[in-house]
Image (tube, rainbow, N blue to C red; front, side, top):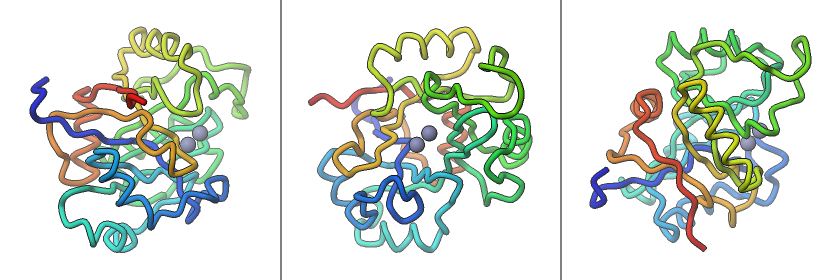
Length: 212
Ligand SMILES: [Zn+2]
Ligand SMILES: [Zn+2]
């Protein structure tokens, strides 16, 4: 990858606007925090809620094109949590939906499906104990976040290699301090979430941990 052109994008961030568990993360503070930490972009991936385009535009307004905030969602499926990027809306994707349904909707809209925090994704409610066989159509796995232990990265990378998924990272931040702690580097700055999804699907990102 060309080291001169790299864009750090945190693929997994919660805020207090739509994730009650992120009560200290005020989205109004995100822009400055991104600039301070050298993040080019981040994805708002609230639990089962999506920001409107207008809301995001308001948030990034003062920063012109220096940073981009993309719309995503973390879906609480009955097969665990999945971060989906590139959806137009959440039609048909209510909490408790199956991963097969998520994949079907995502493929119609060219959205990327990312298995979040694989080691924590064990509380299945849609039949059987722990998932052993994932359906095809999952594009990537989150190999690092602030909610997973560092040693879990090895296991996550093994899962990715076995399943032929690309490896990405997002912070899963629920507080401002954690934004950008882990992120994915791309060699191009995606114009919008559809383009970001395309880059994730084609495996063009590299998972990275922010140096302390
Ligand atoms: Zn989660
Ligand atoms: Zn999350």
